[in-house]
Amino acid sequence: MENGTWSLCPRPLGKHVVRNKWVYKVKRKPDGSVERFKARLVAKGYDQRSGIDFHETFSPVIKPTTIRLVLAIAVHFHWPIRQLDVSNAFLHGFLDEEVFMEQPQGFIDETKPDFVCRLHKSLYGLKQAPRAWFQRLSQQLIELGFQASINDYSLFTLHTDNTKFFVLIYVDDILVTGSCSTQIATLIRNLQSIFQVKDLGSLSYFLGVEADRTSQGLHLCQTKYICDLLHRTKMAGAKPLTSPTVTGTKLSSFDGEVLSDPTDYRHIIGALQYCTITRPDIAYAVNQLCQYMHQPRSSHWQAMKRVLCYLKGTVNDGLYYTPSFLDIHTYCDSDWAGNLDDRRSTSGYGVFLGRNLVSWSSKKQHVVSRSSTEAEYRSMALATAELYWIRMLFKELGIGISSTPTLWCDNISAIALASNPVFHARTKHVEIDYHFIREKVCNRDVKVQHISTLDQVADIFTKGQSAQRFQILKHKLMVCSRPINLKGADRSSATLGEQQQNDMQQPDMQQQYLGGYAVQ
Image 1 (cartoon, one colour):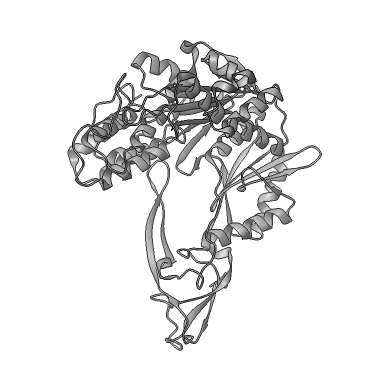
Image 2: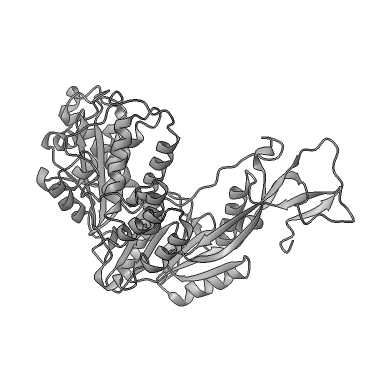
């Protein structure tokens, strides 16, 4: 009502009226304690009709790679990172469509009980609400002098003579960083004059990711999210394992019995996918499990439980960013014909900014490769595409790279194929779009180098490793537990443990949870 979200009007004849409901939620802090109780009026968007109540619904959100890249840059330059939250964000977006809604239960006007609400601004639950809010916020940022990034539309940049500002938007959660803390404060005040913006201070908890920053670096982990997942799957008392996969084993569509109800499997795999935001060490295992979501079997369920057992012993692990050089190194690899069912290969790559891992991928190739060289070549092409996108993003950020990006590959034939056009006669069956890597190499946009298989970091994204080899590669990814100087303020023990004890119904599981939660 303060925002003028709607006005009452007589029920129009022949018009569709959307229903609504109240949604109640307990919002918790990273340590598990109650932050506040929320009651929100939500429109029943499934009542809407395309072309009548809504048209466009798509709204971009910031890419995880962009978030990690900007955070790594902020750590390198020792910039402050501020976190903002917009109260009732969707209520600020203007509607282009004519939408009518019933009066909310408990707030019906006694003098006009038959009237309906004519919506002027968006409301939670409407299909076009995210898009309307993003358009309103982006318009205000552009009026303040920011420019929207072409490579990531949820990134806004502002460059002046001596300062740089970056704004990252994920719906109503906003990160602001830049070279001048005074002008950052000015920007926050300008946004507060337009929206109901809460300044949450330095970055600490963003999209389920816990951030701990010191003068030495920034540690990102998802301790609370992983522990909640372990409780939801009743794996909090499981025995921890040292690796998420078994060396040499391959999953198949024909091993084991088909699960009678695949719903739980799909929910857990979706949660594990979100865990990979700060846990590249489980990227390969999760990628393998995702390939069988259409018809999971008992063997896939056991493989999923192994990943959960690995997470049980590494709940506090996450990416650690330290000040480093601004040079880009990319490691790419492939597992030729690794899939037992269709003999397609698995591609993997990791992009480092100095020592900091900012982007990675583990993905099955779309076609069958006829040789290991071809499989490696396709992997190089995928890594080059990501590398080129990151390089374009650097140009928009206005930050120079100290040297030409380097692509490390352990296949000599694939390196020769990327550099020497005389091999063309032997590679006619390879799609033309993969050959763009040659153009990048010739233009010196990318430098391709050979690396020993023993030093190939991308091995962790393409195949299962032994426990010893896995720990070596994990260390190279800069995935580690919280530094010693942060463990004194570890949010993972007493408060959250007490809250879980109050919430859980099974006393025996409580002790198992607390014992596993504090493991380090």
